Length: 352
Image (tube, rainbow, N blue to C red; front, side, top):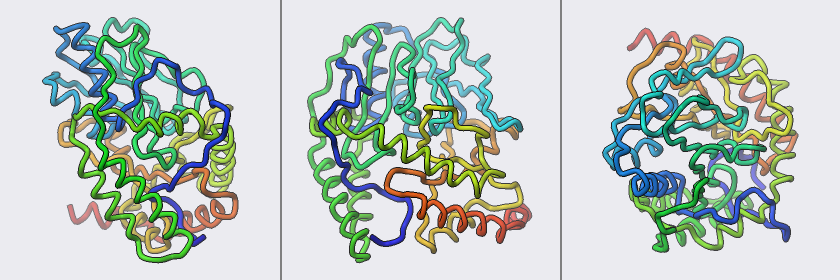
């Protein structure tokens, strides 16, 4: 195997036993975005007058699109970084909306929403699906594609049951391309050849319609129920604990609660460090750290405690493909890169 961290997954090994993560009456979708769209279609069948929705100010544009395409009036409630190493949500703007979308970040938090909210709660558990007691709210949605190699992996669940039928149409070519890309990624990791998988993944992603509601591959529903969740959880927690020794000064969250499982290890870089410079320098070393997320144009500017999440957050891989040796290399390289680039953020601000 070559020495590289991050980027796309390859196929996921399975075990015989059901991991018990998913209820029996779940609907499987092609993506997390399709899962949100499916839930909104069901919600509108039950409540045709629903017309307004509140979403977190820190989120992916693909989460916004299904609401936008269905004509919802959107409000964004502030998600702010607190100096104590935590995130704070201000739900006051959301209380008058018909629908409230909530999410917990990177596996470090429990789902949170106001107990006196009277509308419909959609709980996106993409980041926290391996944690306990997360199936809360009127609807639950998510995707497994950030956790493992899975072609589709979207899912949706309704506490009161769905009125809308589960979709049956599939994006067969999308699925085929994804599985082909998994094979090419594994070849690359084993042989250090050409990165053919990147173009294949890109081609597949271009086929996802913005709000198309397509079924997931039945093979992926079996993958979801039979991946070794205990192994993934233990490996990721172990990797987090290793990275913490190097990156403790920059952690977005001070602690990972017992039994919680990290999707990534999110950092908040110092304000004099340009995150794009750090990410580019790491990429030269074959370390690929995403940043969540590119800011969607529909999200308004907020106060500095909210804006800092877009400006300075970097997500460090800690997944099950790696062990302590790789995490030590990653932690040392990242710490050195941050220290070497102190001042790069000041240079960027002076040019704006």
